[in-house]
Length: 434
Ligand SMILES: Cc1ncc(COP(=O)(O)O)c(C=O)c1O
Image (cartoon, rainbow, N blue to C red; front, side, top):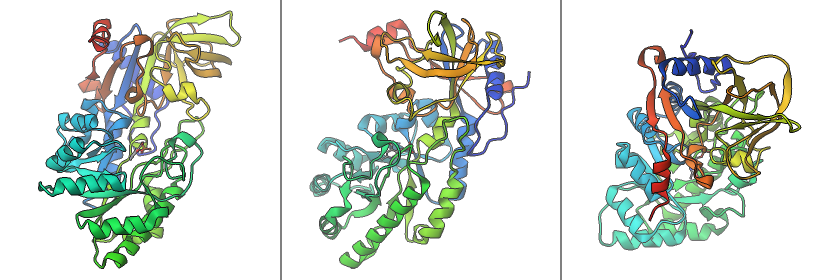
């Protein structure tokens, strides 16, 4: 059995054969949940990605990986050990970051609904705070009247570059609920004039579906705003620029993910001031770091031969792949079929539909997908599920979270690490209890 994972780069997309090798190793070790489903996370690939970012961006850039993409504490702990920071979208995520050992000065706190007591906690801890509104700045100012902080505080500005191809993950259009619109520039100038502690600018264009060129244009717009702020206030006040996340991942068979190398090359060409010594950069990548590191293997429980196309019932569905179930055209995942022993199935492709375990007729993760003939007890592999899957886990029908295993290049010697144990029915009953 070959069980070495290939040398990793940012664009590595392990093949069905690569993953089958890992699955057979896990079967051999008795490491996985052989009756239902197991999620795997390639920690070696994740490390290679973080190191790529660290290599491409200037030294001193804080790469705060978005917790919402994958909130497993053991995954966060690995990121922190690599020197990355963490982006928290709620006070609960701040607590996850702290539980993973992240120093407060490497935590970025975003949320459109921060309460005054949340802001006080964030200031006390010294987090990087991205204020979403001018009212939030006024609350921070009131708090700073009676406390000291080491926090850097930024204002999120909507650069209004428009929507990408997926409406629900585009946040730099006029309808966006986030940030202060560039259209109220006078108010933005007032805020920087009034609050000398406001030393940062934050932008985030959106996630999947936004072209790299949009991200580059948004940075250009925000850098121009910075220049105007400096002219208005008469000093170089903005010393931190948080560029958000948003590099897409390639979920489809034929696609290639855009590389951060290309992104940084465009940024250097169009926005050279970003790399000047008077600016500290923060990034908040989530999906592009995590999506390709994760994959899942589910046993096929039943095959419904009397349906057209035939239908395979597996143990992960809309609870795990919420976006795929509701917007299948935007979130199509590669799927592979393995024999019960973990060999990649080949042969004629027949259209088959893959459904999950929930009592909900929309619980479909692929419709009429051409795949080798699936039989009960086969394994179905779901590729690229490392981001926005477990983090969006749904309690519909109260299925327990699956077992999550981590591994790295040395899996043949080190084996697998439990990143999260499987939830038992008792755990779920406790979750719903008073
Ligand atoms: C403020 C902010 N930063 C970063 C991210 C992560 O974006 P992505 O996963 O697309 O890189 C998000 C995603 O929702 C976000 O809202």
